[in-house]
Amino acid sequence: MKRDLMEILCCPVCKGDLELEVDVEEEEILEGKLICNSCNEVYEIKEGIPNLLPPDLR
Amino acid sequence: MLGGVKSVMPADRGLRLEFLRDKRRAQRFYKQLSKLYDTWLRDLFWTEEMRDFGVEMAELSPGMRVLDVGCGTGFLTQGILRQTEDVYGLDITIHQIEKALKKVRIPIVRGDAEQLPFKGETFDAVLSSGSIEYWPSPVTALREMWRVLNPGGTALVGGPTRPKDGVYRLLADNMMFFYDQGEAREMFSEAGFLDVEVAYTGPVWKRDLAIVTRGSKPG
Image 1 (cartoon, each protein chain N blue to C red):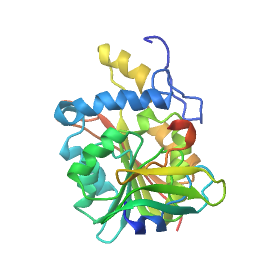
Image 2 (image 1 turned 45 degrees about the vertical axis):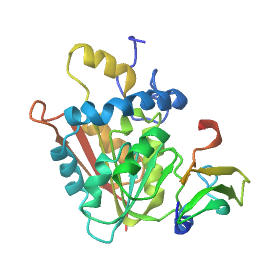
Image 3 (image 1 turned 180 degrees about the horizontal axis):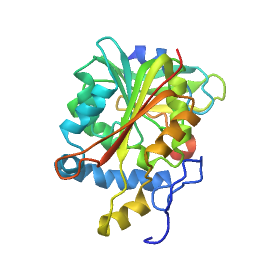
């Protein structure tokens, strides 16, 4: 995913703002995490695709 | 499995379906389906003509930011991209997303239609086709569409109509949720949409195969 996607993403559960943690970045972010500032849920970015499924659906 | 679900009232949670109400099961189902889908299913049930009918009804224009909910392998997405470049996709199944990303170069996130991972007032239009029939709670998903739409924005949802007879009807009744024109209006109104319009489209062999509903978020 590209960094500017952060502008429109939020936590699917509580709709809080997400914080980006990058593990691997080339032209785009390939591996990393999105962490909710409000409910602390962690969402993974794998192979460039953010998985924003609520925890019970993963 | 071939038993029960019938009359579909668009009340929340009242219409949970036997087969796909477990979303994990839905994901597995779609993993298999995505293998078949682009080869023959899509051409049979959801033609380019039908897709373009839906896209036209949404009245998109260049510069609009659009979300495709349940983008699957990207068939509707490609139709939307002819109108505007600023398109985003969401799907519950990783295999469908991977296929879509081979066709369209847009951001696609994995997520659930009933709990969208997008901030409020983000999109000018939200479109969806061939997805609502598997949503356990359509009104919840429509409310989420409403939330992420800008004031004055448009939601457009296309789904199948209930097969009239045969084995397909029996199967479909147990896997999918169907709604008629009145129920479509009810669901959209319940989710907060105004100026709700309903139309039917289909391939040559069945001109009312799909029901397309459009609504506006008050401006």
